[in-house]
Image (cartoon, rainbow, N blue to C red; front, top):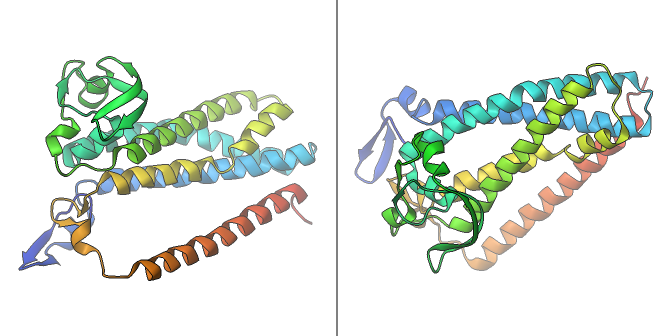
Length: 283
């Protein structure tokens, strides 16, 4: 709702829910919901596949681990292309409701027709350009508007409400890059595992992708949340207007505490998972 607010009424400076169904089922809800459910399925699939592969590296005769590897790989092979399709629809919805975010994701600085797809660049926010850019001419216009010569709004159309470009640009490419690797490994793995046992190099590939779903999801979260800046509620409430008056020391201590607690929990989780996977199912 904070990205595509709907169903609310204003009572002075207060936002009040007028229609709860419209609040929940706002314009981006179906795309975000489907995108996250598929991301959860892919994350779980690669977690199971990676842990199964880790077990098979320790004990190649574990039939249970082989079954879970095949099942998880097949699930990922089905979910990955659907996720890419839904992600494209989500992107088109974002173009409609949050075009500045799309401009930051694609590092499009100036409104133009036939905008190129920037594969890689170093966004230069001070100069308003891309350094060391590797581009495919007109492809961004085609992907987003299905027309090679369509006009795309650049960041210049949203001054001064421009989100930080570099973190959004790189996080989006990390998300897409990991997603492509997941698709390729899932399809190749599903084909290979139909009739053959996996070689050790393939098991290492799956083991290395154990936490890939989390990486892609966190990268997507960075795109979503940083890309909506400077808005907390798009078009209604700026982040600066909602900021509290907490001092720097208190804020730093709070963030440090959160980082330490979650860091310890994450480390314990990973160590426990890999240890259990190495031991296999206990009778």
